[in-house]
Amino acid sequence: ELSRRRIRRAIDEGGVYLNQKRCRTAGRKLMRGDKLRIVLLEQEKLIPFQPEQLIWQQPPLYLLHKRSGQYAQEALHRSVGTLPDELAKYLGLPPTASLRPVHRLDRDTSGLMLFSADPAQLQKLQAHWHACTHKSYLAVVEPAPLWQTQQINLAIGKLRDKNGRYHVSEHGRACKTGAEVLERKDNRALIRLVPHTGRTHQLRVHLSVLGCPILGDTRYGGKAHSRLMLHAQFLSITPPALAEPIEWNAPPEENWLW
Image (cartoon, rainbow, N blue to C red; front, side, top):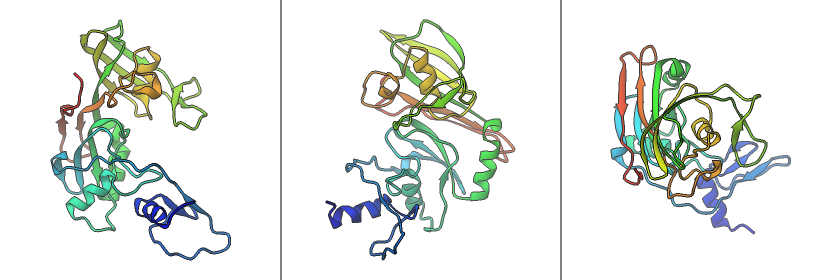
């Protein structure tokens, strides 16, 4: 049985849907045929947004150094406490402002992430994203691979389970990743990853299938760790996505193992 307090919290967090639309108002009268869905998760400790995470801004564009564990966008059970929500409050943007991520980062991945508060600018950036951007990541893997460099060309498709996992599949979408070992230490390696495509979980799946999963990535065979050891370190954007070319480099957080 759900208490009024628990339902109120679910509404406030954005976990209640009426007829497939997020319901943000308590006390609404239900009509015959209405479909109500309540998504409940155990109360979680959110990692708060800090002003120093905003490392560049040229309104309507904002670049953040996302921390591992922060929500980069709305989740099924949550619309508040996410980076767009917290950033909009910090910037004093009106409630009607549509602050959206230009690209994706998994919740447990840290690093550079670009947001736009203008739908037209967002659409333009996303249309040119893969042609006009260069990204690289750092990952700590265990065990260390035998190879020094690798070009990984393996298509990825979604598994038919409820865990949101992906796998290498000949029926999946084409994926290409460049990988280079930067350092080796004991049975671990620090690897630079350059994704040439932008599929969900691409880097995680590619390293896992090569037998060197990312440390902390238990979903794909990695050893348990305090965080997922994957960090979006470098991002450059060139015209026509932006009027002038620009690039950024962000070191990992303090909890980075290496």
